Length: 225
Image 1 (cartoon, helix red, strand yellow):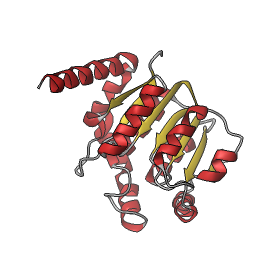
Image 2 (tube, rainbow, N blue to C red; image 1 turned 45 degrees about the vertical axis):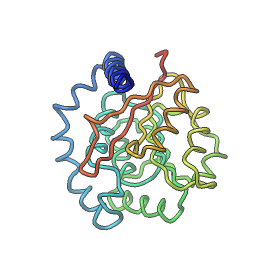
Image 3 (tube, rainbow, N blue to C red; image 1 turned 180 degrees about the horizontal axis):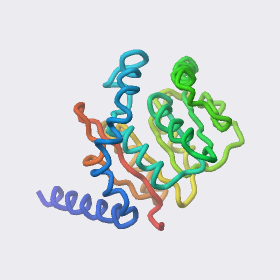
């Protein structure tokens, strides 16, 4: 009982710190429905022709990613785990006068090509569009990210933990990291452990991202920000 109370207090404390650090996040609740309606048609096309609703990122997370992009205007975006997230992030890039660099990355070359085709059909590729398999991305000379979506399943060694270990070399103090699939207890604990080791604050985004399948994401940011 005492542990449950401590856990609840800690969650409220972290949520308060999140909103204190990024107060603009609260506006998402006002804008979510209109962002969702803007994405719905393409989301339906994606989950009926390429993937399925229980495998693709939720439309709530898609809306949150679009909202975060508008708010922080990232110059370098990591799309680690290509899919509908690629559509959302490239849609944002296409709307910018000076498009940000978007690295769309996946461990599965065929899946990466399917994502690229979905974008190409919607004329969303820009000169700054870059697609990599995960192993090639690890060897590439790349810029550090302002915004990272971590939703990658397939890597060279098959381990999501391996992606976390590499992540620190790709981020800076101001980087925002959105990690999906935090509803999976073992993975969530792996992320928590890594974040603690790296002095990174991890806050669950249940009110912002929880969907009908119970899935939700977390937001990670440097504690010293």
